Image (cartoon, rainbow, N blue to C red; front, side):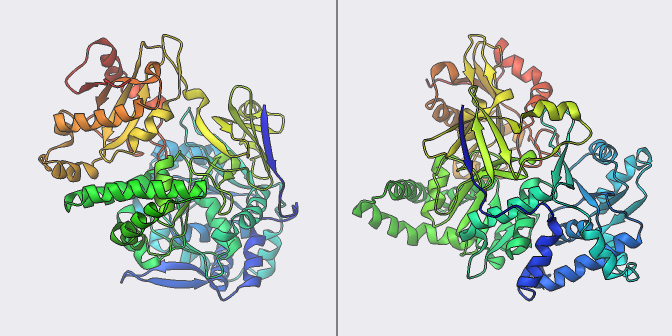
Length: 610
């Protein structure tokens, strides 16, 4: 049993709730720009802290006038946008509780979240969101009010609340204490029906106050910190960062359409980003394939190798003179253009939800962008550990945040306690009891500490594959490096109680035509045709062989099948944070899996490495 705990840097205030964070920010910097809203011409329109506060109060009054009572739960189904955080704080100021619903949720998932939570009102963003809710509305008799953002209902609500006094809002906002429920966030349901995680006001308040000090260089930049949010705010990761930014006075913009991400980064010019590893992989892969298309593929790859070597040398404390010169050359030819594409001001990027990989970490670090990998779950209000600007090790998820303790049990499972740990699962005492060992939350993830208390994630306890020969295999160790290949969309390692390890692979539909064109193949071939193309199969084989080199022969992938489809959130195979739903995939593709063990079809590859 190994344990590391970081003392809190800010004294706890059990009477404080999330509304205090905004009240304090208004008092400190009322005229600073807290949000920037996208304009039709591609620019950004400022919203000051005072303007945001006034809009929060007006909307809170509207909710009160509409009959919302303290403790009532309101569902919200919306993409990442300014109104998300506006509704969040207005709900708290009205004394109510928000229940996020992922914008990609099916009607059945909408019904479960709203019925299980006991929500009495619903806010939908679009007509499509409303339609999915409306399909199950008859099964939700408790829902009394339904509002739609795109119909202007928030403005109508605010207009209807002018008769509610400031004193009533002040009274309501002070009702909740630190230990009271702030929100119900439902798990992604990777291992069954989603459970409602009860996160308290103290979870957000104490974690925000401590994280702001620990991440001072990131969120308290004296020249003005700013971030462009594009991952879903319904997930605890972006939700916590939104609250942290209000507390820290960080300017925030929103861009939910990842296809518009690069233009938005260019115009917004954030100082830090929040992303999942897949985004960093995409930026790298797109850049590599663009260079390949322009006949500069070898230059890009040489630049990337130099960047990794340079960052590694920096970390060790000594960079050879020749490497410095080589790096300066590539900085002009390649790296400067990449920095400019991301707005030119990005200094930090916070990455979570899956391992990034040391190579990409070093690559971006050499560009002057320090990727601060962190680790956490819904049940830990997002971060439990994170690399810090002045205390960072590439390839790890960092030390415990202030106010948080992390333990690795004898079987390798990571346990967490502290200011960030949730209260329990909503109306599910049995699941709550199973999730705790005393005050320690059992994450279900596997990890290891180094001597300095930096945590590395090694796998998922319930996802460990045990082959017929008794070999324990962690799928993530193989999947993560394979997924980094530009041609690969997703990869799912299988082989539980089987004689050897195999994998299901899908192709990245965005990168496929680019890769095909760069490699002298027909860029117009269909996804189905590509799964049988010898050049494509050979490239997938190369990615698998490279991953196999990092493990023993018994752990290596011996066969793979390329599926002629995508695994997406919409198909039900990925969570909102783009993690694979392993149990669903194993069930849906059971036939394809069995074929790899009983005689292989044309789309099978046979690994020869290891």
